[in-house]
Length: 313
Image (tube, rainbow, N blue to C red; front, side):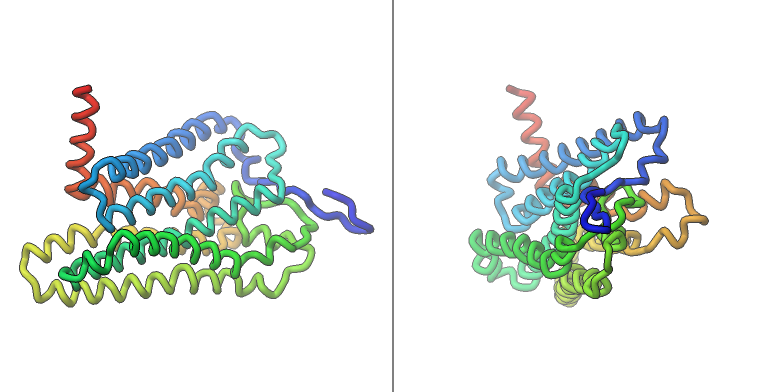
């Protein structure tokens, strides 16, 4: 705490939830490290396979590669801090690092939904307008879509949460293992009016708006599939099912993140209270490469060819 006049202002936060780790810090560290490395390896393998195999230089796989990049970004926003704090005695995090983590996590969250929206649009064009697909979804258009995903995600974060950077904090105990913006705002000396609408605004902009666009795309795909052959229906199901499962899983994660578990603390264990809000950052980054990538026939074939080439060398 830094003294300012007659009051004191926090210049760092203490992540108090680590105080309950105790002797379990070593197994926790190994499990978290293994999971983080596994996420990075699985997503990187998919990115490399798509980059190396020219047959995968198609809009759907390029957008999938961007999604994998986002999974690595989201995981890197969380896991290195968890690992570094595991053996810390004070569990302190400076304000800039805390703000950086919040920034990366919420931009990645918005980019996740926006990337899925771009992929749903790609499937809509491929299935509903197949003869115009190569014209509409050209390389330049795909590049613009990816750029738009990241610009929109950055802008939505700035419009929703930039006010946090100007807050003064009179308390510094965060009852969590990472910098949760809802808990951070409660530590400010005076809670601004923006705090009550910031999350609603971000949710509308980065979750519900993309979800509505995804829903419209799949409703139109469903309408077209009802009139097509059984083979085309099967192809549509193969490419669209992973996205539907992924969006559903994201919504489950968002529900867990939005629940105020502090109100339910006496009824649930501390481990559950801490892990459930992080559900989406635990499951989604590992789900993506297996659900989309290794489950798609072209990706599986490309992985086998890459492995056979490496073994022959």
